[in-house]
Length: 440
Image 1 (tube, rainbow, N blue to C red):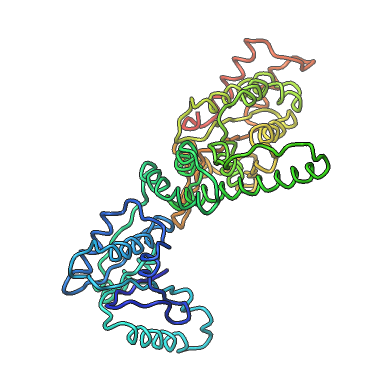
Image 2: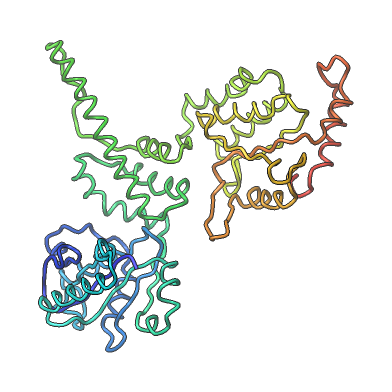
């Protein structure tokens, strides 16, 4: 269990050398960030705390969805007096279990530390009444659900991940706190972009935590960039005293700053299609031809697919594009895939290669590999044995094969320069018939 809160009857400050601390001090002093939304969960918490028996609860949710914020929201409600009589005069004390366990090397040392902490809390509080726990769903199933005696003493309260719209409301509520901290201003478009892009491109974390971290780092990046520009301007001013100071006014975090941070986190080009990028997309066919000589049909088909993706004409639940490069050895299938990675993602390391020979030792991969590929092609996601989901919505999937190479070689002219249109159609039909029906 990651953290816990104890409900007591009097006020107190830090306890146990900082292992436990009263949230009411922060709520009264305005040190806690405002809690936007989550009113239903806070009401549910107060209902459970107001019960006569079994008034302990456990907040269950994924990391970053706002479990601790609910406890802070309860402390703010108590500080403002907007609570029922059953919990009047109480305070919320947070207990960091990680700090409590840290440094316990020998058996019984943790129990002794916990006993001393409880004695200290009893001296500060008239009575310990209720306990609020906060943990993830996996930890709840592992440590609490398997113990029926412990489980029946905690009422579970599930905290779900907020939607993009709810996350936007949370960001608007926190805007002033981050503007004061970074001494700048966030535009409405920046907050909208933070909520939408974090949901779309960051799939291993949860809202609203990832969106909050996004605007926080964007503010820090803008401040750092401004400091560097100011230092350069100061040097220029010393060298040329007649030169006036640069642009004055408050700093602003824009949508472009949010997009820049997302790109640095994920390596995915998420900037809107600007004039410069539209030119780059239009010239992608030319860029690919600079590295790959020939293969006009393949390069043209790839360029069209990428352009359709960048303007939004694709299934959002599938990979950006899926290709099968088929042909004899040495014609440039792998080279074209490398060039495509550099052209779209700006660096060759973006390409991850799986050699299917390792899965069977023959010319082709095992049939079970294709069943895995079908899940990626259809749903854009893959789940491992531990239940973790890998997102493929922002990937380009390229499969290379020697299937049909003999057909191409036999159908080609002796000089090998080109195939006629009838020969091309015939070769394509034969190769297509060799591919699994599900992959077509």
